[in-house]
Image 1: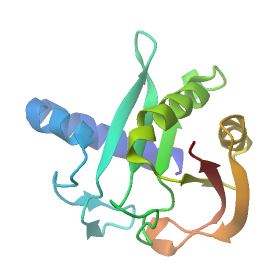
Image 2: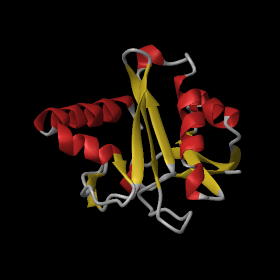
Image 3: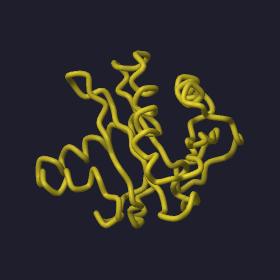
Image 4: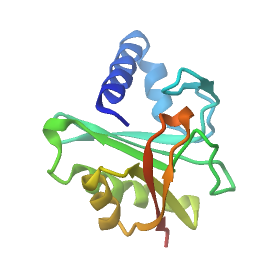
Length: 162
């Protein structure tokens, strides 16, 4: 995700938080996918998948990580490139926050008994590739992301769940 898109999304989330804090908190854990539609980078609105959203925190916000899935399946809709997505603020990068957040998310989702999760990253994001590899990711493919997800080249990794 381009940085400007990330920041715009985070600012919109903060605006919504201030307007309705209880509703925002309810969206953090939405295992039924009932918290309403989500807006894609291209402006399209699609149904929210069940999921969990977490903030990375070291005394202040470092970034975010989220998990989404379709119950009873490892398949995802075309607009959803992977089960787990994360972003770290630029001034917090290189400190291991994403690696640790992904490790903890993998533990948190173990009760869902998914055989694997898929995580994608941009082809030029070497730091994210290392985060995925450190958490047991195996490269599945290099692919062209659909326009609905912003386009560009990506890499898809699979992490087996034990």
